Amino acid sequence: MSKGYFKILRPGINSTFQDLGRFNLHHIGIPLSGVMDKRNYLIGNKLVENSNYISAVEFAYQGPLLKLQSTNVTAAITGNVNFKILRANSNIENGQCYETFELKAGDQIDIISTNKSVYGYFFIKGGFEIDSFWKSYSINTKAKIGPNDGNKFILNQKLFIKNKESKFQKKRIEHLNSKIEFIRVLKGTNFNYFSEEAIDSFFKKEFIVSKLTDRMGMRIEGPKLENMVETNIKSEGLIKGVIQVPGDGNPIIMLSDYGTIGGYPKIGVVISADHDRLTQLSPGSKIKFKLVELSEAENLYKLYEIETKNILNQIR
Amino acid sequence: MIKNITNLGDAAVYCDFGNKIDQETNLNVIKYFKNLRQLKVIGITNITPSYNKLIVSFDPSVTNYEKIKNKILDLKSKKNHNQNNKLIKIPICIDEEFSLDIKRLSEKLKIENEQIYNFFLSKEYYCYMTGFIAGMPFLGDTNEKIRLNRLETPRVKVPMGSIGITEQFCNIYTYESPGGWNIIGNTPIKVFNKLNQENPTLINPGDRVKFYKINKQEYQNFNE
Image (cartoon, rainbow over all chains, first blue to last red; front, side, top):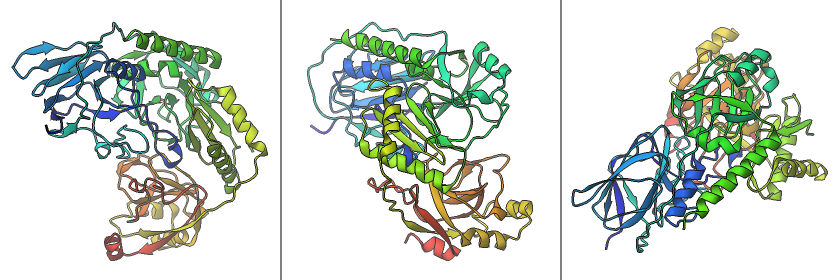
């Protein structure tokens, strides 16, 4: 039997392989990359009994349409995703997130859209036949590194499957992606550059997620934040979650494919516990910030981890 | 020495080496970077040196701010690294096809084109850091006579290989990328080569760089 693969009949808007990211390369200009929504990644891999190092297909807004050839696979989709399974015999099934399903040779999976969110994940048991680059399977389209020569998926491409046929096992979990009222932030290293009025607006007014949002960063629009000191700083390192404010007063939040160095003042940093929810805010969403202290952020991250563990433990 | 140490969010330590941007400060940053890297501290996910800062990010499920901060402060007693830095020669073609902003520079600085290149080519530069995009070196310091701010409106696409100057610095665009530096030429040399996985960056922090002029013919034949 020849090697199984998915043929891409529609690539989707921004479909890539992602895992937990690429570490310790900031000093040469390579960001972490990796999945935007970590919790949904961990749940999906647990459903199909993969380790956390097996990459998923991450898609944004509209996902791919894929046709399976020459093999059967156990698959799952996580996130808030609308999808259909088009069986080889022409039957059409509505897909359910957070449960495994079996795809047989000739079946198609049509990942139509993410609902009121941005990212979704597609998993298959055993993973895809791809090579790691600097110990990660994440595609970084900006530096053109990772599997698929660092490019997002294109039409008619084949995604080869690691052939490990096994008996299908139904697994499911009840899961709702939690929404929160606030995105919580810690003071940034240039917090004092901003006027009292700017700080007041930042924590009291609403911002709107702009269309200029992708895996690199999220631009938000709202009251202009007035800088009293200097609108440029000497370029220095960046990390996911940093909120930079350029001279025009509109904040930019760094996401997984951030530039490793930046020269705009940092008003705040989104706490790690809120990264997943932040990245799922689609353009037009309202966003409100709340200031917390470091010890609180640390406790909230512990809580996030316990919650994740509890969810994963329910999958058996 | 570290003048101030604080947290950057809940997953990074921010070390400030003072306001001065010079080689002495930067060599200190690089020393800390190398020493810390050698320790292979559990939980550290990235160490980012820049002109006068060092940002150490970590996995908050493995460690925390206090622990990593103390590791960094303990480094104080460690002795200096042997500086083993190279001099790298970079060809530059200044054909008008590549020198996108030489006219602007010449007008604003009120210096002839040729004079700008003489100043630019006569100095040896120091690499402060690499980043923003993969492998992009931030070099300095340029002659005081050819210093100018960024473009008022940055370009959406700066061609790969472009060599730009701004303030006291110069850099090389390792990829096509948005950018606002004044472009004075282009190099055919691969400054970032992902196929060389062990050593993808030609120029590393602490290295020295000297540019030399090539003509269009030499540019075109360079990679053959």
